[in-house]
Amino acid sequence: MEHFQVNQIDGIVVIKVALINATDKEAKTLLQVFERYLLFDGSKIVIDLASCSHIDSTFIGMIVKIFKKVNENNGQLKLIFPQLSIVDSFRIIGITKILKSYYSADEALAAFQTERLNRSVVLNEVTNLN
Image (tube, helix red, strand yellow):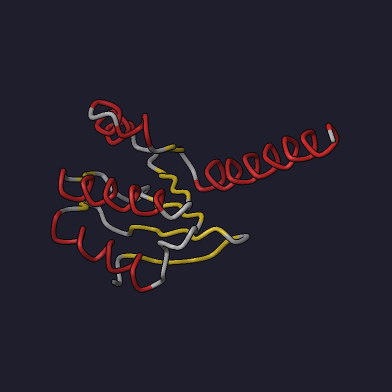
């Protein structure tokens, strides 16, 4: 698990994938990281793929599997991948339609903050209607 660094920033779990090539060999390890840190319990999670210059289909499939499981448990998952070649690969296979992706950790973390504020505004508006 040495290639997966887990940190928490303002209640959001950030998993940095410190690999140049993310392949089937590491896909199971990513799942083990989620299981070890109990991240299928409604957590807000960012997977940082900024170090990756290549991600194979098995690793992408594992990200989709993890996304589904996180989503089923009312969690949220966002991706970071600043390299355009990876963004294009994810866009072509349609992953960016279901998974929100960002070019930096700051953007992804700010998106969680914005979503939280937007929900708060909606709840306040509903409360004020009563």
